[in-house]
Length: 155
Ligand SMILES: CC(C)(COP(=O)(O)OP(=O)(O)OC[C@H]1O[C@@H](n2cnc3c(N)ncnc32)[C@H](O)[C@@H]1OP(=O)(O)O)[C@@H](O)C(=O)NCCC(=O)NCCS
Image (cartoon, rainbow, N blue to C red; front, side):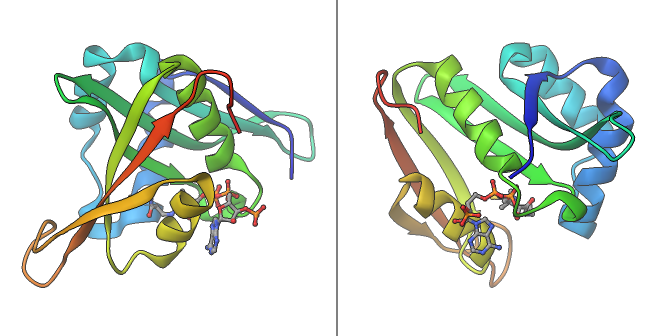
């Protein structure tokens, strides 16, 4: 584990976030404009995680985006730079999101073949609610997952 700082996204972070997005999702990566749309809609839930590199400079290692609508809170996307995975960066982002949401539930969709993400979410306490066939296109199913939030028990 490294020391991870989580803060709100700022416009100047966009280039680095898009680079992490492309390294994480390849041809499915979101375009920069979509990040700005989410930022305008829910600026307090678009979070950036940064770590210190060897020269003690801060480096953005990952991001998460959550949106609230009439159904509640939905984790729209989370990604960590492949160079910084397995060090608790995504965990820090989810913890910070949960602290901000305080109560209710957090929902998300994840590809049924995305083993690392499924393991990550299940470790966090998310449970599989139902399968959504072809959610990401032909032959690409997704799981709807859900985590009930308890205000007094952030992980
Ligand atoms: C899923 C993802 C966000 C996890 O980020 P991360 O910073 O590496 O995760 P963390 O280090 O915070 O992991 C926390 C816990 O989740 C579990 N976990 C994370 N990655 C895992 C993996 N590849 N395999 C198994 N378990 C994993 C572990 O239990 C880990 O805790 P531990 O290290 O104490 O055992 C990252 O792999 C990623 O960016 N993937 C590509 C983008 C993506 O698929 N996003 C989700 C879309 S729905």
